[in-house]
Each structure stands twice: as structure tokens, then as C-alpha cells.
Image (cartoon, rainbow, N blue to C red; front, side, top):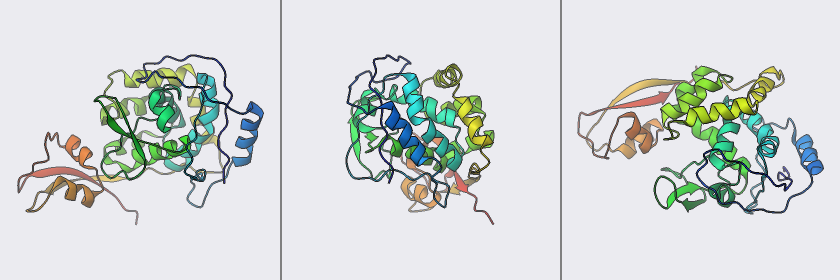
Length: 279
């Protein structure tokens, strides 16, 4: 079982266009113990190449982050673990974490450990909380520990067809990843790519991508491959039934086909993507 991450409480400020501004301070342990915890957990992967998550005891862990440097120091290892397993650049993961969570100080991050602003979406069966975002009282995923948020971010991007093209860019092309996330609809902010790229280059987050590539002990995961398909609507079809068939959420189907409602007509052609299975 992995010990929970530990932090130092230090005064600091951070302002990078993040949505929530509420700040809360909690007690933390010494920097020496944080370093010791990282050393004990270093290199522990399971048979699938995934870093094991801390045991879910049902206890909600609260964190206090004082600076950009402290956030990076705390979560850079986790971002690299996820890069090895899923192929998402660690620099992108860290930059999104910084931006979406307001350095871990944003109201949503503080009360839910949600560092990536991932909403509940259809099919989410985990814990949740409500938070004002684009609309009032929207449903957001809630995690007992930030590491669950990092793992869910990896699975969120790698399991949805609309993000599949990002994995063709390679795991060190952070600029194209940043622009692609905006194109795929991860964020509505037109300057979202520029903000991610600024964070990556200002704090040299791309060095974590290079570190993973140079690590010969663990190979970076190959991206999933998808093929474009067209589904012709039959009698009895609904967006939900189609989403279940092709493992795509209803929201993704509507985005891919520019649909404003759930209404379908027999014979209507719906664009879908299906994961290719390796032979």
C-alpha cells in the first residue's frame, strides 16, 4: 500500500486564469518525509505497466499546495508514471493539473481532489459533488486522493474516440497535444493551448517527457488505434444504445455529429469510431 503524499505548507501565490479562487490551508508533513515516500514507491509497477493507486480507505485526503514548484515536485512522478502506462506527455498532464486545479488551491480541487475539471458524464458511478462552472451546480467527479484524479485523467483521454488523434502526435509533442485538446473539446477557452504551452515552457515541464523516454526500463504504452465508421440508424436505435455499442459516450456522439438533441431518424447516418483490436 502506498503512503499518502505529503506536502509542506508555505506561503505563496499563483494566478493563471483558473476558474476557482477559494483557498484553504491544511497541516502537512516535512519535505524529508515526502522525499522518503517517493523513494519507497519508485518503480513499483504491476504486470500491465500501471502504477498502483493508494488503497481506497474511503477517507478523503486534503492537500495544501503553496507554489508552482511544490505542485510540480509533488505530482511530477505521478505524471511520469501515467505517461509510461498511457502515452500522454507528462508535461501535458502536469500543465493541465496546474491550470485546471488552480495549483491545487481551486475550490473544486480542494473539495473533490479533482485536478482536471472532469465532469460526471454519462456512466460515471463514482463519488461526485456539485460546482458552478459553465452552468450553476454542475456535477463533477470526486476522488479520495489526487492520484485517482490523475489515473482517471489518463483513462478519460485514452478511452474516448474524440481524443484518439492526439496519440498520433507522439508523447513529446506537447505543443500539438495542447492545441489538440482544445480542438477535441476538452476546454472552451480559446487560449487554452497557449496557457498550457506557457506553463510547460516557463517551468520546463517537457524535461519530464524526456526523462521517461530515456528510461529504458519501462516502455511507453502504445496508443489505441481507432477506425472511422458510419452507423445507419435502425428502428429502435437511440443515442444511448449506439454509445453502448461503440463504447462512446452520448456527449461524444453529439459532438462528433453536431447534434443538438437526442432525436434520431431511421436511415440517419451517424459518425462513430471503433477501437481496432490487435491480431
